[in-house]
Amino acid sequence: MIRRTLAFFVIAAFSISLFSFSSTENTGIKKKQRVVKTIVIDAGHGGSDGGAKGSYSYEKDICLDVSLKVQEIMAKELPDVKLLMTRTTDSYPALHTRANFANNNKGDLFLCIHVNAAPPKRHSEIIGYKTVTSYAGKGKKRKKVTRKVPKYRTWTTPSPAKGTETYIWGAHKNEDKEVAMRENAPMLTEDNFESNYGPIDPNSPEFIALSLLKTKQYFKRSATLAGFVQDEFAKIGRIDRDVRQRGVGIWVLQATAMPSILVETGYITNREEEDYLNSKAGQKELAECITRAVKNYIAWLEKQQNYQDTDNNAATAANTKAMLEAVDKKEKQRKAF
Ligand SMILES: [Zn+2]
Image (cartoon, rainbow, N blue to C red; front, side, top):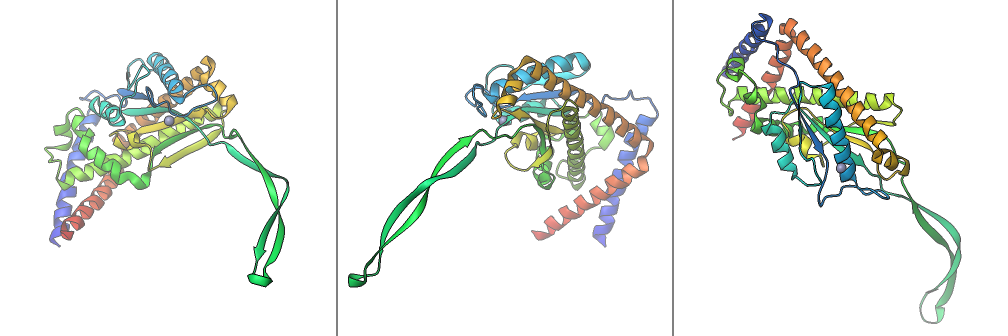
């Protein structure tokens, strides 16, 4: 009973602070903030890490070329957005360095550019038979046994896999992201943090609840952007291998406290796609698709924010529910000790 009262108090206090944040926006006194101010572009691999290998090229070089093209086109299409690169040369910044760079620069989006690879296909066929002799039984009963066994020829051919896919951090792994979010506290970097959220202790249940809320929000944003990227690829006739969630292997997506996606731009192991990925025209096309997707994402996000401004009650109700769950969970953890 006491616990419920406490939870209610926390929610009430929180709803008020969220509500007051939104209402300052409605008055129009505060200039509307741009939804995306900084985008961090991360060219995968680099330096001694070549990434996947094609018949004549390395993933790391394509990642860099496409990333630089994305930077060039985005600078023209989104002149108000600050674009930051994790690398612009053939170097290898450690993964935690890349994530820290994005977090420290208060990125609003993290875009990783990669190239896919598939292992070669194995084939085998029977090319004849050989006779194998063995013996069964012991002593005088020992008998010679012969049997025919097939002889095989085995060979490999390049995998026919082709197309693009975009990864986001797995929803079932959101607790890991929540930790990264808490450690990097993106809310603390927002303008007017104090007036928006009040004086909050990072170890308090309120702060933890807010981290959880942000994690969920960023998951939705990452998934939306990933969908837009795949849509743009599909429109120009690339094979759409869809948005995928991954919980392992994409550490940077977990460690960045912002919406983040990893784009696999094509298969280096497919000769036709290797040529496309290495061509100037292909790289330009890929960069244009990614830029259009980001523009669609910004438009979507602006619309979302307008909707939230005019529908505070619904937003507050959803937030309250998330907060209640988080506070409850934290209470249970505390009781376990
Ligand atoms: Zn890669």
